[in-house]
Image 1 (cartoon, one colour):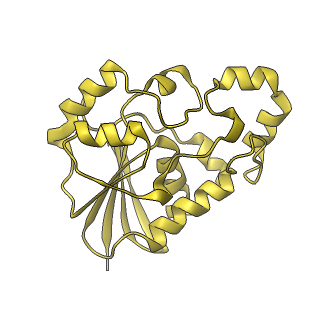
Image 2: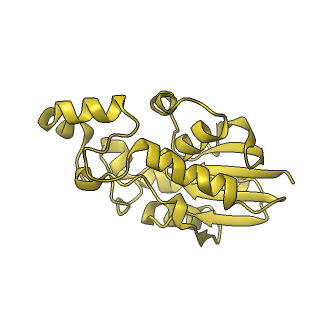
Image 3: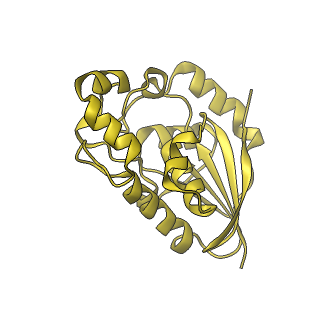
Length: 190
């Protein structure tokens, strides 16, 4: 049975604005909160509403007027000991580790999750955890959207780094386990 999955990326947070690996506690920016409130009327309807466990995703869902159940497989990418640091800081301190992380999908020099593990977790949810039929809306982190797209359309893992997911955009996947079509993202509110 066909299902429509709407992945809504969380509103802009301070960590996103600073290009910082977040631990899920970074508050939304004032502009991000305003955009989430403004985008609520444009949100697609669904039969099931889900969210990642991060404060950013829960707060975004709340501002969008959505009561959503937390879905553990949709949690953000575990960046291990890099959490809280900016990408430029890590690149300056550990250039070889960052280069390896960006070039090898199985690498996890930060001690957290590799890109391969992230894609497998999110892909497993997409192929086995999404209810058959209906419409599912999930408020998630941008990395989760990227991993879902790479998995759904069978892209090579390196394509993950070429996908940009902006705050408060909707990415739609239509299909069923093992057979997904992508409807490219659109912003909720300008």
